[in-house]
Length: 328
Image (cartoon, rainbow, N blue to C red; front, side, top):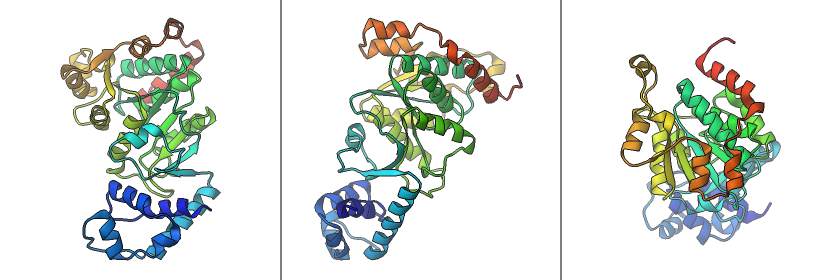
């Protein structure tokens, strides 16, 4: 293996370092042999601060070698920040992952993606609207990137796949730890579509509360624009919205996320997060056509989005029924 690649992987695994410090080490240290010779003082000079603890560089290198072997055995690829295959938009983001792991094929940098996220417990109207928007965007050749979570994420992925676009999912755990496990078949469909499952976490990393907010910055970074479908006041989707704004991306709210519910529905479906986003100035999106118009795509592409996805109607019904726990 190219020792520079293994050096970058080793650095990405070092604890107690900020992302920018890891990137600086990757840039300053040219070879794996040079990395192994670095003392605590050498590292402190490069990152310009003191370290409370230091690590055994040989052990770190051995761990990197083990992870690389595991990746090869499990058909997992990885790419570092300085590799030409690293997604350009992700490289421009604040706090970009020093290394990303993936199965499948990374997004074509010449094609724009849209991020679609929302609550894990959406209303039927929200689930249907997201499915149709994502499906019609797929018909127009636009891929969705989301988080493979239950609810809105899954509906966005499913709709987009019915629209025949390659899908992209960003995980808050290792690639080999698909979460939730009930979405493993959906993850396989994403890979079969020519898309990718992506994570900044090495194989074997279990999901944790702190990993999901972190992955949301990757969803925002890979997207040209971000659509928040329906979200409560405290929601991971709103974290994605904040990252999108910080990164200068378009931030939109689906109309389902701001429509008035009955008193009974309000008990079950919390839309305060998306309602506040709209109140603060996020534009409301009603259909895929709205998105294509804002991306200045031609009339032929926009016309496609008025077509009902007949081939996906059966899956839409079954997906919503599963979501709402209704027997059909």
